[in-house]
Length: 88
Image (tube, rainbow, N blue to C red; front, top):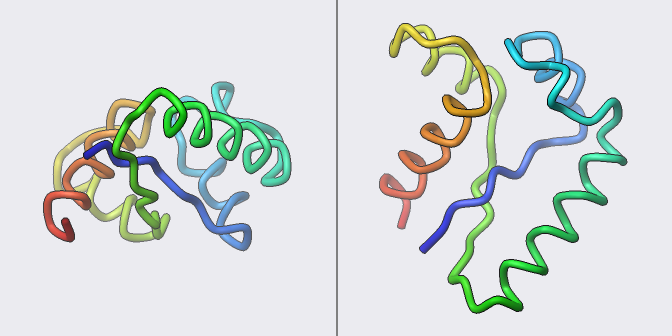
């Protein structure tokens, strides 16, 4: 099972505000959604058992604080993996 971070439209700008690697994120939610949807579909077609993991940005921020980590791509990936383990 592979977790795939799924962000909320209403939290996109907040994610960009708190991310240490904001330059790696798409400018708009619409851009991200198009890219994410395509990538999700590609992974499914390659045979991956993939599941969307809803990311609440405020929970992510709190998790990063508890872990002593910046909110960057690696932290987001670990947060999603942990979420997948908590809710298989």
